[in-house]
Image 1 (cartoon, rainbow, N blue to C red):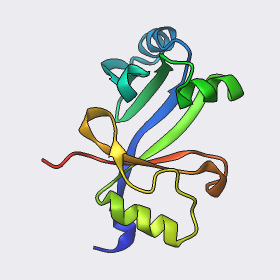
Image 2: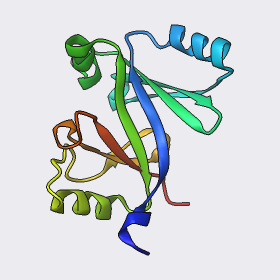
Image 3: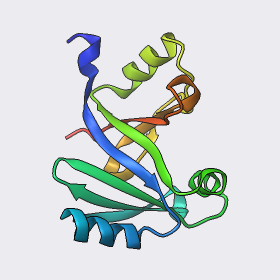
Length: 140
């Protein structure tokens, strides 16, 4: 397998919001989206609501704590695009490749994400101002 094939697709696009429900309704009513499940992450400090638009998943991030990084993001930038998540086959290998290429890592090692995934973030200053999440599905 060549290294380029480690990325297998777009996992999701994440949007930071103070209240996810109005955007869920708008996506369902205006674009025919399907509401997926939701999870509480980071000890309940972050509510994540999933919305499916055909092959694209939108992850709506709603902080439940003023101390959460998404709450701080909202304070600094307001609602909007938070990150783009890429599916990878081998997260540790992809992190090593990114680091070797000079990309600044937010997470040096994978950590738990939604749906039992492992995730790690790459710093936006290394990637044109876009926060990128690498996401590996749990082993089957």
